[in-house]
Image (cartoon, rainbow, N blue to C red; front, side, top):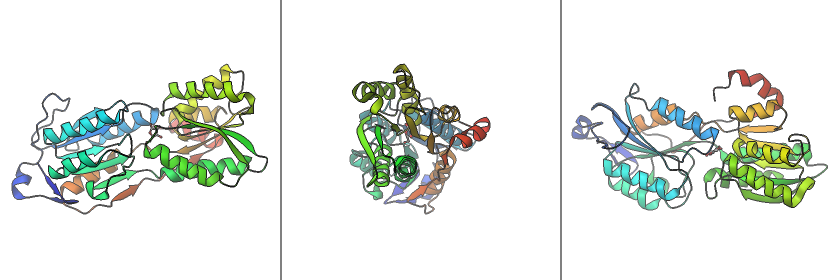
Length: 323
Ligand code: AHR
């Protein structure tokens, strides 16, 4: 196993000879001796974004690319995700990649990985633990995503004023926390009134349920919906239609992600604006894992750029949208 100490990969001649020899009984991985064994602790499968991210990771960490991937999806349960990481440590994998469900609670297990000499690379979301406990984070600027959504709201509704409801992502996740901060910054001092803000756990089902509650409580007073991801916005569409209202017209909708179903809703005029969150991180993460194991220095934070789309953009981009 390649040894990782104090933020730097240290590869001894002996460990080089043993590179990729970690054994993983009872997993779906089937790598040969010359492969790098990587344990990947995914959040779960809550959204279209997550499916695209998982696909990108599996494609990048293929045997063809020199990897033996041990994949775990924790169904968005933080304790299950920590248990998966602990199991990777016990298996003696070469490196661990985590898409952390929530920011807090990582110190103990990250220290265990450090003591075992196994480098940890974060992808997608961040943690509150010390930066010394992981080699690198590859992800998105969630705060800027929220700010871009808020700026669109202020630009389009700031003058006349509007009543807004918010569907938040998973409570305690960096994606939800940072998007909320960026959005709040952007609408501060404007005529936008927040009627309510609740978590929809990044899922369609919860987005629908929470939006039904908002509609029961505030009815046609709601002018605007900000959903922290497309899936919750898509769930809310059903609730809005069932209430006899027209999404995109009676209630304007801004979301984050820009996955295919979200872009289709934008092209249809049911969503009004989408801020992109790029899920295609696999290749970059794989490159960083190899660099860390080779003892090369890597950036502590690597941010992948995002765009933002109007209805016209969605119509143009949909035919070639890969996810
Ligand atoms: O962390 C990224 C977020 O997680 C995506 O915006 C959301 O769709 C996913 O579940």
